[in-house]
Length: 173
Image (cartoon, rainbow, N blue to C red; front, side, top):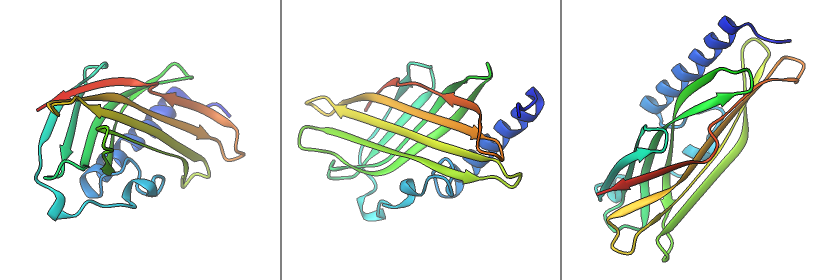
């Protein structure tokens, strides 16, 4: 069953509202669909380090907040444009918390697919990844970020897939 453009836009508006609500409330894109994001919360004692700000290749902001000791990414925030197989597009926020930074100044995380069961019997799968690395002086951080959303009808058939691809980002102190 193919959704009409209006129905698909309402669904995407729902994704965006769910994402915005989640970012404001508990930070993951879709709390129910992405429990991996909430599994390791940063403590307030680790907060208060350096904050890096920059932009993505899609001209959206990216913010990376470090712990005081520089061993953890306390929070990483971004916005991404996703292109859909239906020809539509959607812009969504994404974030990660409490990422360990290796001795080589690198960090990475991925999740999914995680399935969100919708009230109309359809399902939505979310999956994504992010990786980054600091320069030797730790004045700059850069990496790649991706997010993919796959929508299924009540019978389980894929009705649309929206994917950001690997989006490059860079942030400075």
